[in-house]
Length: 320
Ligand code: SF4
Ligand code: SF4
Image (cartoon, rainbow, N blue to C red; front, side, top):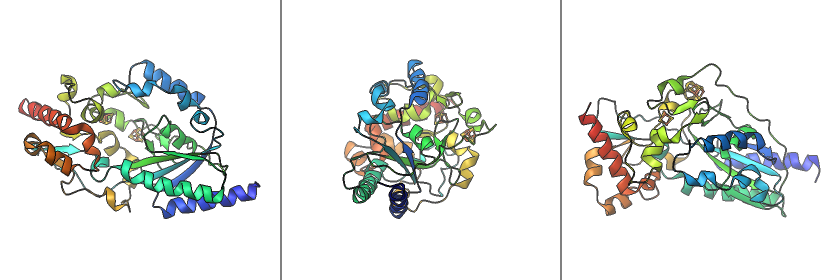
């Protein structure tokens, strides 16, 4: 294949990504992530991944994507904006628990893979012999690190990826392929001297720039921690009304002033809006939970986890 063909294929692929509604598309050449893995392994060794045991596994594949797809040449990173201009209830309203913005609409695990499948089909149209594999937060792929290498954003001090064009309210999708393209330059860091996310995190979970201690993070406790785990008092007393996730470090980020409304309708808030009444959660039966959160990220906690979060909030409000 000639350079001319790679260049035309790159244009065609990025055009298709835009047509599918992705906000951005960058491409990185496959190399081992040695520097990134040093940082990651030190994070794991310090226990900052809390009970997320899967993060300790497949370190070889995380370093070298050709162990996932032999002959891999390129990693394509797409972003999907999910910002909608809605707000949480005012903080004086203690009767409702706030939901993280990413969970107001449909589950991205149901939305993005369909588009990645179409984008992968575009690669095999351009390169009929190419192999592809795609992921959305589902495999041992260092998505954020590839996003930086592919130039779609930088990793902020809160550890999320930030775009200069539209902030950090977006999902990432990854395609690993044996096809070659023209590669983008890695993104520089534009946090500068800002430390807003570190200062405003109510639980001091951002222990150093870019290093989040999951065991101190409200998102971890209200989404990832199993329902039979009690939320520790030091977290419970500073949950600031969050019943599912926490957006504080992104809400205060100055780059999110550039957020633009998503064109993807499935990420608009569902009928329950941006919060859930604590009383409703306490009364909820399993059938209601299953119907209300079908294809929603909130189903991840299961009813028992959501109830644990609601009761923790209620207990701490009564101690305010
Ligand atoms: S999600 Fe909330 S608790 Fe976690 S690091 Fe950000 S501000 Fe802190
Ligand atoms: S709040 Fe400031 S330091 Fe934190 S990620 Fe945003 S720009 Fe970077």
